[in-house]
Structure formats: C-alpha cells, structure tokens
Image 1: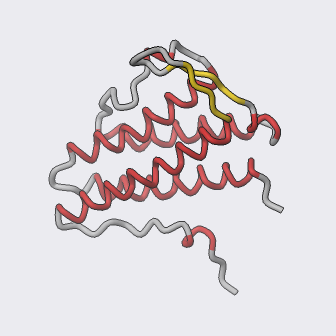
Image 2: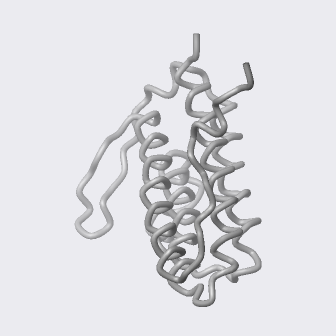
Length: 158
C-alpha cells in the first residue's frame, strides 16, 4: 500500500522530471522573459513554503516571485529546490506530515495554519497550474511543448 509520504515523494519526483523537461523547451523560446520569470516562481514559491516550515530565515525576506534568476542557473536552482524538499520529506515520519504549521500573511499579519501534507500538495498542484501556463506561452511562440503527462511516469510495459 502506498503511504502518503511515498505519494508525496513520487509527486515531487514527477514535478522535478516534468518541469526539467519544460525548462528545456522554455530555453528554446525566441522571447524567454515571461517564461523565465514564471519558471523562477516555481523555485521561489517552493523555497518560501519550505522556509515556513523550517524557519531557516525570516519569512518576510522571501518573495513568491523573485529574485530573478539568470537563465543559465534556472535548471540547477530548480533541482536544488526540489531536492531540498525531497531531503526534508525523507527525513520525516508519516505521522509528522499531519503536523500543522502557523504562518503570517505578509500584507496584514493575519495568522494561518495548515498541515504540512497540504502545503506539499499545494506546491505540486501549483506547479501543474503554472506548467499549463508555460505550455500556452510555448505554443503562442510557435513551438510544441514537451509531453509531460504523469501517466508517462506511471505506465510499465506488460
């Protein structure tokens, strides 16, 4: 039986694979600016959420979008961000994924709470959302987006 922890690890690995493939296409675009900014958001959002759990730095120092990453560092920064999450997850127990974190909304200081499991699901679902936006940008610039369907990672030859 698949545990929630293993499901989340698998989900991160899928998004790592899919977004790495997508970045290869983004780097071929004639006009990369919007796509590079959006891809950078994958990284900054993941890093901000992990920081909300670990409290490594003051949360107000981290943004949802930005800083801008140089094109040539995006791939390494993406892998580094996902690998931090995988390291975090692999060091956790199944039960600890049900723990709640508390964080403040920067614009008004209002306090919120969420389970770690739900934060992880949000990060990965959010990645799918932005992957669709990037696929549209790729199409609008006349290129064909890579196939990144989940099923490609799940099917096995019979």
